[in-house]
Structure formats: C-alpha cells, structure tokens
Amino acid sequence: MVNIRIEGVIKRYGDNTALNGITLEVHDKEFMSLVGPSGCGKTTLLRIIAGLISPDEGDIYFDDNRVTEISPQDRNVGMVFQNYALYPHMSTYDNISFGLRLKRVSKDQVNRRVQEVSESLGISHLLNRKPKELSGGEQQRVALGRALARSPEVFLMDEPLSNLDAKLRVYMRAELKRIQKDLDITTVYVTHDQLEAMAMSDRMSVMNKGDIHQTDTPINIYDHPENLFVAGFIGSPPMNLFEGNITKKARRNVLDLSWYNLDLSTLPRHRQLDEFEGELMIGIRPDDITIDDVEGMFKAKVTLVQPLGATQFVHLSVGDKLITCNAPVDQRVKVGDDKFVRFDTRRIHLFNKKKESRIHE
Ligand SMILES: Nc1ncnc2c1ncn2[C@@H]1O[C@H](COP(=O)(O)OP(=O)(O)OP(=O)(O)O)[C@@H](O)[C@H]1O
Ligand SMILES: [Mg+2]
Image 1 (tube, rainbow, N blue to C red):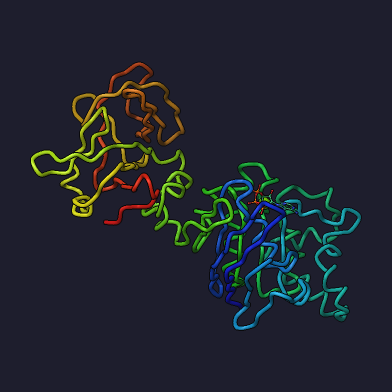
Image 2: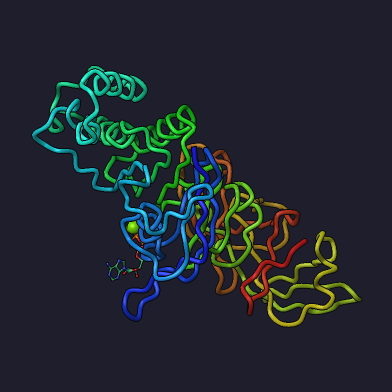
C-alpha cells in the first residue's frame, strides 16, 4: 500500500489560480477527504494525484517515488467519478473486467478477480445484467468494482455518491467506508458535503480558493476550527458567529456583543486576551446553546422552528442578530416566544477578526 505526499503543488488556468501551493500527506491505508465549496480546487487536486493533469509547480510522491511525470496508467490508481458512466452495452462482468482484459491477464485470472471483487461488493448475483437493469446503488457498486478490479494501490473518488438519492447515499457512505477498511487501501475522497466527509474520513482537509485551511480528524476540526472559514463551513447548521469588542471591567475581560456583555474571565483562554487589541469574533455551535423559560444569559425572540425528529432547530433574534440553537424536540417552543438563551461557555470559540484565526486556549 502507499503513502501519498503532495508538495507545493500549484496549478493555474490563465489568470485563475486553482491550487495555490498545496502540501499534504495522505498516510498509508488512510481515508482522507478533500472538502470545500464549489470551485475551491478539489477535483483539480485529485486529478493531479491521478496524473490526469500536470501541476505547474510542485511534486507528487507515492512512498519515496516521485510520480509527477508518470502516466495515470503507471500510477496504479483506481478512480471513481461523479458520473461513473458504466459501458451501457456491457454486462456487470464485462464492466468490472474491462481494465483487466486490456492488461492481457489470463481468462482464469480475470474470472477469479471478478468473483473476488463482486463478492466483496455484494454484487455477485448481478454479473449478467446490463447497467440499465441495475438500481443506482448497484451501478455505483459496479463502478467501484471496475476501479478495484486492477488491485490499485490508491483509490481516488470524486463525489461518487452525488447521483444517489438521500437514503441510498447514507447507506453507500457506510458501505464505501467498510470496503475501504476491508481492503486497507489509501483513499482520497472528494466531496463538497461536509457531513459526508465527517462521517467517512479518518482525516479531512478543508479547502477554500485553492488553499488548504486545516487538515485533521473530523472531531478535531469540529471542536477546534483553526479559522473563521473552517468554523463557518464545518457543522450543520453552521456555527453562530458574532463580532464583539473586548473591554475591561474591574480588571476582567468582557466581550461586548452589543446586546450582552459576556464575561470572558472564566474561559480557559482568558489570559490570551489580556494583550489582545481589536475586534474579536465569537463562535458558538447550535448544539452548545440552550433555551429556557426562566433563566439564561439574555432574552431573544423565536423567529422559526424546524423540527427534525429527535431535535429541532430554533432560530431566535436578539437586536439585529440571528441565533440558531439545536433544542430537544420535547421542549415546547413556538414562533413569537421570548426565551432565555444560554451559551455553554466551555464550548465558545474565539477568533481574531482581522486575521480570521483562532485564538488558542
Ligand atoms: N480546465 C479548466 N480550465 C480553466 N479553469 C478550470 C479548469 N478546470 C478547473 N478550472 C477552475 O479551477 C478552479 C477549481 O476547479 P475544481 O474543478 O478543482 O473545483 P472543485 O473544488 O472540484 O469544485 P466543485 O465542487 O464544483 O466540483 C475553478 O475556479 C475552476 O473554474
Ligand atoms: Mg469538483
């Protein structure tokens, strides 16, 4: 298996810089997601790893081998794309074995390999069917089979689940993850869906405008976003972000949010703030806010309630700001109610507004 190293990769299209100097290591056997908004460079980076596009600067290494100038065929990667177009006139068997037959492998070997792959994907009973006789999820698995049949050392996937309906997508996430772990194959997975990346990855890289903003485990990124972009991108609904000014009251650092003065002296990182000048951004996730009828930090008016089954998103307004919280579904709340709001102060995130970076604890 293979460790992938991306070093200082730059890719320009005319005046547009698609990748701004990307450095990233994907460990052997790791499931790494590239996640970020449309146009941030995910597909470009994946295609450079595959060898389908050459970088203007920088290098790609598979283990200690520099593969930057090696053709895709010789990199031994398996790829699945968003439009995983199977050959429509070919059976599942022929689709899966297509790449092997090109390699002039013996008939017996091809047969054995197709059986192995289709068993591990649970599609052995579909080998004689044509793509149009398969469901979306089955077609998806045939496309995976086609990519896996040649025993690639690296598995690259670009939004492979985006053509599936919501239910099948959730099921296939778990399936893909299981298959990847069974095969222990180094995988780079592109998605713009941060929930999908959270659910599947060992680690994920959050990209924006040709740069990587943070690479870490999903839980570390969720708990410790390094900057405002990551804080706003990861999490659904997004983290609430408010600006405020630090003032000193009786030698305590107080964050003036205009509708509430938040005493920061009890926060673990209040010491960092003694020297702080300028405006802060405070972030608090909907999960870390509670609402109550009798007590809390400040009052706000309910503007929208979205029931989700187990919980409900409650949107409130205070001053000209909107706050979203995730409340238990048994809590009675309706539009127009005035509720007390409380932030879990242990779960507050602070950012330097000008630099957009996290203020570390
Ligand atoms: N062949 C090309 N010629 C010119 N510009 C391109 C080309 N391919 C990509 N770009 C530009 O490079 C940037 C990155 O594109 P890329 O396809 O990598 O984004 P992405 O993150 O995969 O987006 P999406 O989530 O929409 O698929 C975009 O600004 C895009 O317009
Ligand atoms: Mg793309």
